[in-house]
Image (cartoon, rainbow, N blue to C red; front, side, top):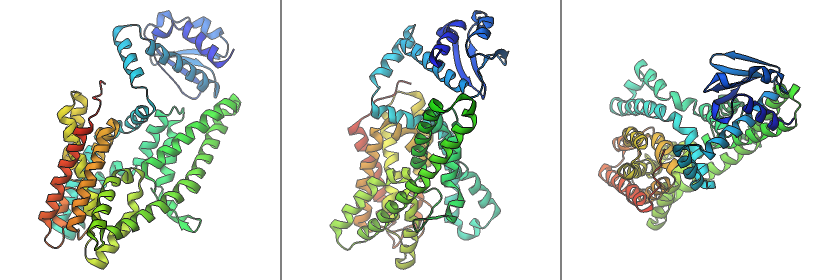
Length: 453
């Protein structure tokens, strides 16, 4: 019997598709949660092909297939269950099936998967973002004296908690979303890409940068790892699956990340940063405004790729040579337009959960912490993310036109007003308001599909 036939037989012997609530596997066992255990024909399952034994424990029916084999059988059982949900036997399941079919486009599926990766992290973004924002504001008011205190360091440690291991968390969630049976492999790959030891490695004459490429690089590598894993499951003998599949998946994925993604990402981000800084600071008003608009509009995608990290040395160099950085206020409009876009979503949506996420993310958003709004609101919805980018383009053009600069880095959003150079705080606040309004305007024009669930 094929793995598909074994799975179909197992489903039949446990009482059919409708009797299975969920199915997962461990190293050797296919674990089924059933609605009615009395329907399961345990003795026949023991005698069925591929089964090495049956155990009832922890409210589960556990069928032992052994390493390698269990992954393949469980995957086929999952497909059968999913198909059953799509067919739907009652009105609710039928409605969900129709909605899923209607929204089954490649673009929407990509957004849905991205949302599924980040939605579990939203409460952490909100909590850590608020802590970090408060700490940043205290640092601006009280300066170096506060920053040197133990309290500031402890609060900063908590505030950076989710961001310090974001690559690992995203890796695990992405591996689950893209069908890996080794979700922790995604966490390991995320850890490799963000490891401080990368700074000790030189490839192609360039020192690697921990975290370069950001979460998008992690997701891409995890997608590759999931593909490699599935190929290995198909060709590696069951007896060797436990050892060979993880080894091949880890080795190929990690090498691909280090030799391809890191160098390419570094070259692109360095080039973008230098060009942007020079054009915004140009004495030609037209060039400056156009550059500010483009920079503001593209900064959100840049943040998602992690390339914005390369801009930090450019900020520092501008501050050292000129006394302020005109680049920071321009790029900060991306977070501000996110706030406007989120307010537009909040006014239109009837989805209770989305409203809650949007409201919780607005306070950090005003304080310059944009992750809750990006990953929880605008990006999963698609068009509001584009609206925020367009709004940031308008805000960035205004900031560049006024040549607004910041004397230091480390804060964004409204608190950045405390760092504006040459008495241009009022002009900065004009740029802030323009960014809010523009993000709201473009999102209202573009609209979005209000999610049902």
